[in-house]
Image (tube, rainbow, N blue to C red; front, side):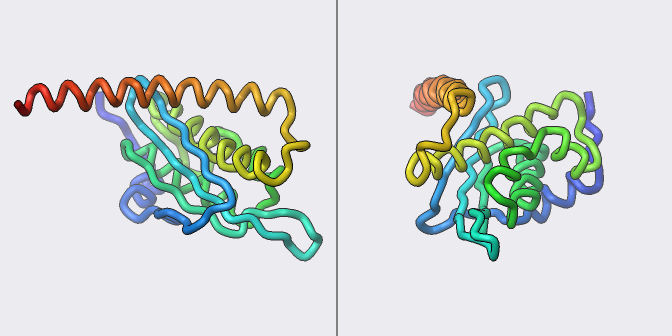
Length: 168
């Protein structure tokens, strides 16, 4: 089955925006998917705007994954940059898919991974700076993402061990 990607997806895959790692980020989030092996990391710098609200001043990503994983990582950073933390948390998979002019149905999970990675970066920032803003729902979502990440890390460890066996 061949996936049909929009021109926007292909452009962001070839020329991703905000790719890289921030030095001393204020928040860092990671999310992954066990079935496909994609792993995304998002780094944020937070500053206050003219109104005194905390905004995402800078944002970068690193992604190990497919065309859609890289494109969704790139677009979420573009959508979140300059937004308040509350506005950034409201970015949905549908916002990402619409901004990318569509994704093949089999790749929609990449949009969820990018929202999870951004959520984790903001959660990380809140944990260090505003623990009082962490709701019970946010904590549940964080624990679910972390549980999935642990499974991926364990699975990746197994894959590395298997690869080493084949090399020897």
